[in-house]
Amino acid sequence: MKVILMQDVKSLGKKGELVEVSDGYARNYLLPRKLAKQANAQAMNEYKNAENSKNYKIATQKAQAESDKKRLEGKVFEMKAKAGQGGRLFGSITAKQIAEEIKKQYNIVVDKRKVVLETDIKEFGTYSAEVKLYTGISAKIDVKVTEE
Image (cartoon, rainbow, N blue to C red; front, side, top):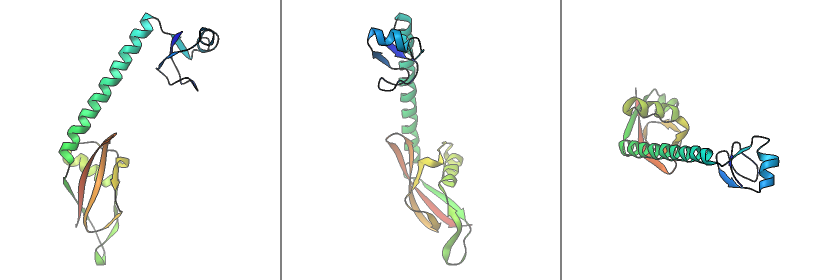
């Protein structure tokens, strides 16, 4: 019997998947506990619509990430910071500050956890960073730190 899972079922599948199970398992365990529903015509139609919606959403997110990558790739973001003697900064330039600068300059919202710095930025100079926009899509940017 084909059923569509309503919740994650261990050793069977995740929520929303279409799986083939024995009739007894479906009638006596999955259906009474509302872990799954029988894959009739209406349920199959809903399943196909949900799949198409999910695929469309993924495609649009991927396309947006590609366009954002083209806009960001190779750009230099200038950050100003106060420093003490010897060019050492008071504190450091963080991924959060870089994400805010990207939003301010290009209106691209980037989560601070998606900005990957090679080293901590604690001195003046130019540093490279990677901005992860989507799975497998990332842009390389440069961060130039100057004195205020």
